Image (tube, rainbow, N blue to C red; front, side):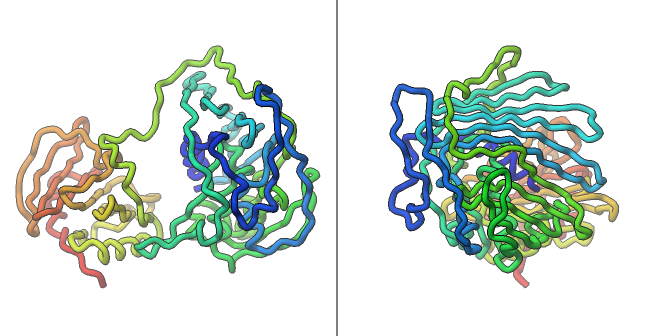
Length: 463
């Protein structure tokens, strides 16, 4: 889960941050705590930020939570090095060592270099994110694929201003809590310590499950507040974290150190810092990549067939114990929603999406899943329903290269067409009923079996 969050934040961060758009110090109840700007020569590559003072005042749970969720407001530059460790289900371990230096105010730029050490020391891989106020470079050196890099424009995302707890954890119209997080520069793994928004949101959302263990503890010369608790198992699914401990810098909101533990108190993951320096002088000349020996790749990213897809919102999504809750939301809010009731199909995931006022329902099912299979299993049915005039996402399981039409038929008031999927034996079904469209894509399930299963695809009713 944490790896996924890091990857996602790394991709999203690419489009963030340009200095002349950041207004961190305007009209905010917490503005007196923010680090002030200092005048600098405009033509200089050097930047000397204001000195950071350690804080020893006692903090409440809400105060430190907000500091961690808005850390971008409370420092100008940072440099450091840390190691992360993850213990996997098979008790194998993977570690990474990360070095970074960033400047996020006045002079914009930074670098972040991570070295991943494969289990059993079978190899290493390095990845770097380097940026300034104009460009972002992503470099990777892998023993398998070699040296490659991508180059992107550094696009501007406006400052959101300091978020409150209610801003971060909002309940949407479907009654599901959505998490809204602050902007950040396009750093990679350094975001785990400098901008720990995802981890803090996941582990501290439920205020009754964590506490302040110690108000003041020194770590690498920084005064930290120590938090400990038991995370919600639904929130940290896929991670072996029964309890956790955070060491948060009181003045900057940086997550200096963290550890998670299993039921026996053994460490299952950690971030251990080797060095951390806040508000040190920097020279933006350091933020120019050395690309000799690297092969440039074409730009990649989310490509939409219809630019209006950017306006599609995910209102609720789950593939765990909460999936039934999302399914009930679909039944409640989508009057044309159909579902499978065949006992050989097991609910696996569900998603409620919306384009303007049009509602989309996505549900996936595992078919005849072996009890020993992990996750979804290998045989799946992906379903979705929507209004014929709406805009739906073009990527994902339904973005298939359809071949010849196999058949036309009608089952349970839906007129179906079935198509072969190019280069495999799966099938894409497209059904129409009045103003609504239903799609089903099979994975490792025969056409004949899906035809039989469609008899149990009926209009859903909320229990």
